[in-house]
Image (cartoon, rainbow, N blue to C red; front, side, top):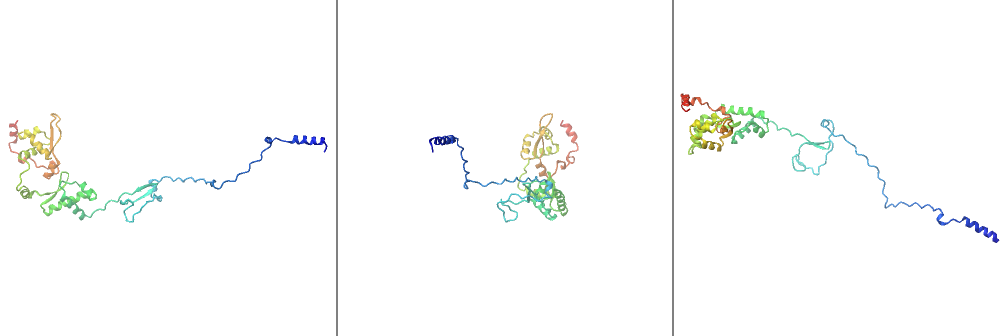
Length: 288
């Protein structure tokens, strides 16, 4: 090759040469996924189904939904996991609905009569029909007629005691015709609890109630402040307001007074007319 041809070949190579920074880069090879760090694709979670809340009308037409399971079920009937008596219930709409307890069965007349008599023998004060109905778990409308029947039976049989209404309740009392024998047994060797002055003052309060101290003193003719305090302390007399004009305290008898006398109301007190003197009006005019 001549020199001229060699120069032309070098010139062509120089014209075709491209610097390295201007040459196009080859694409990077794709990296294989690492099985240790790769996680499986998760499927989308299904949306929870919505259940409309159950109403009271649905209880008879729909099956009860399953409630929360108990962690412990006792084999003994009537006792739950907590040890308390089970009450019939079912889950409705996610809530536990408890059934109302069944009413107690009605007692036979003979058993009801015996239960009432047993209670009346141990009471220390008149007991109302409502309390008896609650204790025996029986309807109140059965108690009153049964007590009337028991009282009528005692009277017809001629017992020395009777069942009587007193102070809004019922209690057994001895019959008045046997009072002499009862007093002889109770008061033998004992002193009367109330003095004559206390009995007179109590009688004035019973027949004139509500009455003030000054009115009681005017009727008895002596000061009665000390006697009134004694009667109040023993629970036979109590305050019941004040007189509008003078502001003096008014007094009346208590429920204990009715209980001791065996009366239901003060209207059952015996009338005073047979015990008053014939010239009572003249005596009243003389004291004015």
